[in-house]
Image (tube, rainbow, N blue to C red; front, side):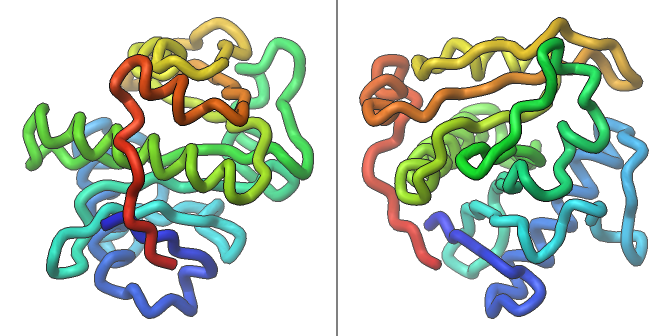
Amino acid sequence: MILTIENHRESAHEGALETMFADRKAQFVDFFDWDVPVVDGRFEIDQFDTADAVYLVAVDEYGRHEASLRMLPSWQPHLLGQIFPHLCVGGVPTGPTTWESTRLCLPSRHGAGRRRILRNALISAMADFALARGIEHITGVIPDGFRREVLAMGWRAEPLGPALRIKGGPIGAFRIEVTPDVRERLSWTGTYAGALELAA
């Protein structure tokens, strides 16, 4: 199941959120060695994990985190605008119909096959979320190898500038155009996972 969690500090999905932040710490701090905040030595929670953030969270039958990503409105503080604006040659795209996708977390314990299934489920959920909310563009900053995958998924997408090498490897920014046929376009490459059960 994919949960859509808003205003997370008041959410009833405490188990999903706690295990999500713990898995984010394991992936981004322990594995990738990113210099990002850690709370109580267990949870990766940064300055953008505010009430404005929306989380798409895949959970198991016990309500525990399997994989997730975070959506941030571009008119509020967000990663690309505040930390990496220099990755965007023409300026950071912002506006009422532009959201940022960030913190894609796919724990290594799942293995490559399961991680790909979860990745496609989250990409599909993000496309559905964007269509439902009237979002026209999705931006983000990710490792450049994965950026090349994202740009090749079938939707209309473009790099926003060249990759930049940082600790942990090169990263780059991207923008996706959310067209009415985005589900069909993602289906061309086998990325769209079909109708998903979304629970608010």
